[in-house]
Image 1 (cartoon, rainbow over the protein chains, first blue to last red):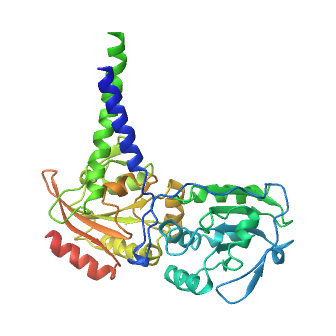
Image 2 (image 1 turned 90 degrees about the horizontal axis):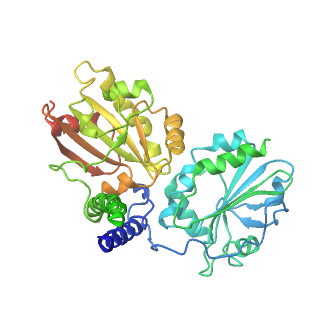
Length: 200
Length: 195
């Protein structure tokens, strides 16, 4: 009887593991153009920054053609950096479109959002067009490849970035870091909670 | 003997979990529910809002099954607040609700529900408020229902005909863009046999 119980428990664990392998619902907006890399190592880098220190400045090209520097927001806006691993992949394609309908939440907290990937501009152009018009800048950390992701410590060993969020206050100080399981989308409420905390 | 007493509940519980997960895995590994078939055996939480409970015709309890909704036809939209098409089509689906609500012939007979695939209750509420969605939306935070519905892309629509004897039959199951409130309603009426 005890042996049977162990067998069933093992079977249940296997089923639970199988159950947890797929954690996204792809929008039909991307049709059949999403490449599924499968289940990846949840995190694969070591952070090089910590909460409480100044966020390293950077300057990156945006899809819109302009160049955006973190320092241009110093003293003016709180900043959320949203690193996503790669264009045309399931969870990434399913993250920024959500942020696209909550501009009011960012506005309410006097914050801007900067989306960053290590993809090049043409790829980001095509990919973000599929999402519709995004209200926030999308920046390319393509060359030198992943330099900004590397500086923050969220560049993975395969050259993609982590799925990470950094909340930086108007003084330029990092107030929150989330390096999420790459296979899952971070809950919006976590970010909103941190933005709310900035006001206090 | 004591070991057996301790083991039996473990066996029962893990066995039950395994059966439920296996059931949905079978669904997930195959196609979404097809027209002519029945819905996967899933539970949704009874809404906390009185208006939504009344709309669905639910009297109480913690959970309900979709065929228990007091209606002749239920249209299920599997959506995500992160899905651009779901966002874009939300106003038109609200209009579908409004057309039904204003029709003396259809009000009460056709009801809409939304299931937010992978969306937390907070995220579902963001979507509901952003688009002022008038019908009940349910959170499927851990993709449990999404897996049972064959891991469809979004938005996905399922039309269910509920019979007087409590049985039901899916008459529409399709991915894709919503082509407008009137044509969609016409299709639902035709395929369900409601008109």
